[in-house]
Image (tube, rainbow, N blue to C red; front, side, top):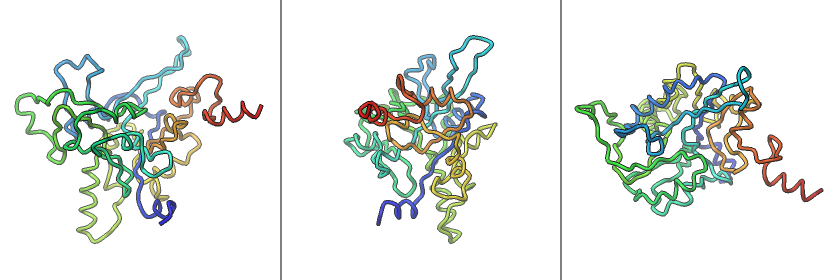
Length: 273
């Protein structure tokens, strides 16, 4: 099976986040905490030790008032495809315990907590800082454990955790489709918690290979881009904005580099001159 045939016979779930719609309310973060049993510490003021699977960052255009502009950037796991679109994402390639793996049927990078022994190689390899290390066993307030999601396992201390695109929801949708005698999971049957919770509908989720899905159409927009595309990690999280300064900041252009130009291409141009 060729690489093209393989991609047409599988799915690549991803999302498009419209930064012009995002207000930075943090509803996606709250929904993620509740849906995935993400623990919290007693002192949440130390953000270096805070556990979160999706985080909202704030950037500005660097201009003084009244020309100041603000943009909020939600950042989950990018679910990278790897340089050659074969599933060799930076984290998967370095894990010695195979605790993180790439699902070729969905394009989702999984995290198997019972295999992880906390070496944190994946955290060092991830250029998006999307992975978090669990320093303590989770302690829930009185009787709060009754409100935990039974579909998601509670993680112990000493393991790395990350966004899974609410994979347990995909499993439920797939089981429902199987019982109804169909192979396809409908677009609205599988939606992560952050997508459902967004009040401005800034996040769109679906199969990036399915032309009928809205996320496919949005990813082809001229306003769409991905973080650090020059690294060739091929993430499945796209962003959209009409503001050029936002795209320039989030793409992390190096000095004297034009938008849309990679490090390799700039080196080639210099060599040709």
